[in-house]
Length: 339
Image (cartoon, rainbow, N blue to C red; front, top):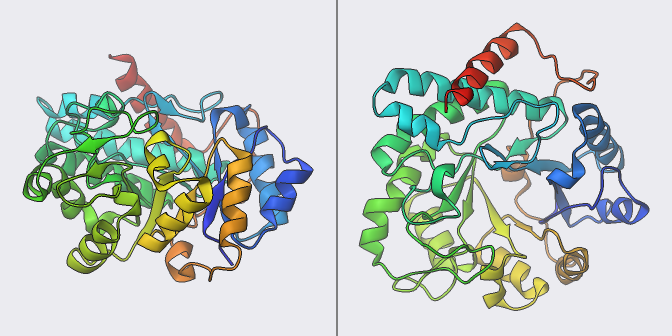
């Protein structure tokens, strides 16, 4: 059974404390960071060990490309998604083809080392937000939609579920929600017309969404990830979204408006998130876990959709995943090197 908390570990191997936490029924996921990565071989050994302890655990990573790419040594270095948007302005067909190849390549490499999914793609507009910037495909939804659709098509062909972030849109908010409270003062109509259209148009391809740690103050006083209005009324009822909802990291500064780690996790789950992330703070993760240990487990059928098609293969210190992988890798590396 899959629990409602995703947490992390400190090193490249499991400690006894990690193993004990993995056995807790309400732990449903593990997210890997750069500190957990030495080589493809080591990552596969780590994820295999996790599944020996908890066969049903979901393992995730942020492997967007560009500056947000945790798997680096021994993996393909991917371009920022904004590079596809730049190419799209004068060679749209090539940009779409490369975006699909990139999605497939990213997913294939991530799955090969035993990770179920990457929290990707970013569907935010590349507007005034420095923390989003070229993590977004483009500056408007008309350009984002075909590129993100192609990227997700590649992911799904490789056997990986998709996660769009950060609903209803973080790109029009300047503050970095990792380190500060983020507030958007626009009306619901403005947000709907500018930022939400990307999410709405791509919803048929989205297996999961991650709400933003942003307060849209004219709409609701809570950050979107703690908001029954955004999650229940808009996403579940009006937009009829039945995919998984992951909270963004509840250790981020913008999440602290809800109180301590226990209150933040309970607020996210009560609002309608299926799984909450508490990262880079083990003591807070333990407090959060203790706070929810008596809650019912989340929707299992929904969360099972995030399980990746992980191949049964031996991974060496260097990836070698066949001729299609090699071809896509060459194309993406050539494109990345052109910038």
